[in-house]
Structures are given as C-alpha cells and as structure tokens.
Length: 231
Image 1 (cartoon, rainbow, N blue to C red):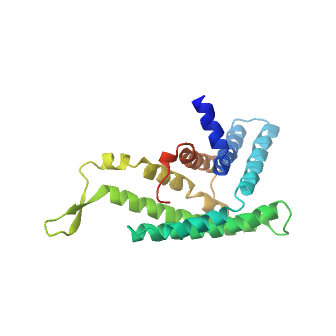
Image 2: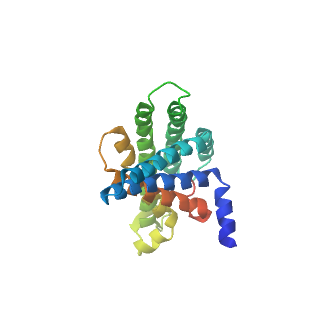
Image 3: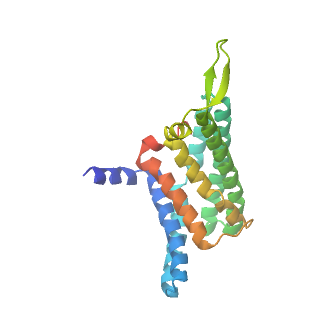
C-alpha cells in the first residue's frame, strides 16, 4: 500500500507527470532505434516514433506557466546570503530557464497550428537557452563538488584556508543530491547541441542520454530528500 500511495502522490504532481512523460519520450526514442537495428517492421518502429512525438507535445502542455515558477524561484534565490557565488549561479540558471519556457510555449502553439510559424526553428532557438541553463547548472555542480572536496580549515588567527578532505569519497557521498544532479546535467548536456545541429547524435545515443537524465530528474520528485537545495 505504501508503494501505491507513493505512486498516487507522484502522479498528483504536474512535475511528476512531466518527468514520467519525459521517460516515455526518450524510452520511445531509444526503442525506435533498437527496433530498427534489430530489423523490426517499419510499422512497429513508426509506432515508437509516434509515441516519442506525442509524449514530447504532452510535456509542453504540462509546462505551461512553468516560466512563472522559474521567475519566482529566481526571486527566492535573492534571499541566499551565505554564498554569493551559489546565489548568482542559481539566479542565472533560473532566468535562462524562464526564457527557455517562454519559447517552449510558443513552440507548443506552433506545433499545434495555433501560431503560424516553423516549430523546428523555434526548437533550435529554444535549445540555445537550454544549453546555457545546463552550463549554469554544471558550474553549480562543479562549485558544490569543489566545496565538498576542499574543506575550509580554521587557522589560529581566525583566517580560513582550504585543504583537501581526508576522505574525498565519503564527503561526496555525504551529498548524493549533488552527484545525482551532476549526472542529470551531464547526460543532458549534448542534447541541445544535437537539436541545434551543432553535433549529430544517432537516435539511440540521444535516447539513452535523455532516458538517463529523465530517470535522474524523476528521482527527486519521487523522493524529495534527493532534491538539490537550494535550487
């Protein structure tokens, strides 16, 4: 019953449904590649591709208004006084995602024909802000990791210096949220460049990377204690 209650609670959250759709989206993309490589019929491969496309469109519907969440998050981050670097990185990431989600709303409208435009071009433009937001996210991950590896040591005169922790592995494992968020951002990192056409990933690799980041992103929704804070 505890598992059922957890599933119900997860599905009641818009973010939870978005993460579930993302898992379905990239699982379908990976499946279409594996089915094609295995010589499956074109009909089965096309069904996987169609599921990928519909899951992507559904996610855009779930994200309507998400830009407001990002703005509110950026405003809350101004109250972080103990670490200026962390505050700046979080605010920059959230502002970038605000623009990303605004463009996402336009892309969704164009995809449904509500707005006459080329959704592919909008997707490429949107991917630029996705890449920038991921860069800010990874800089924050690197900053957190360095703070775990190099620990401030008090000197007799009250000043602080930094020395490497006696057990780096233990210190990193003390905050699994940092490692999980780093994995998510690293797995996602190449995807926007693939959308922009800067690099060309095969469908299977793109699906695998997206699925990895999707599962890593769903874990904090399922288990809130795994959420990276502040964020």
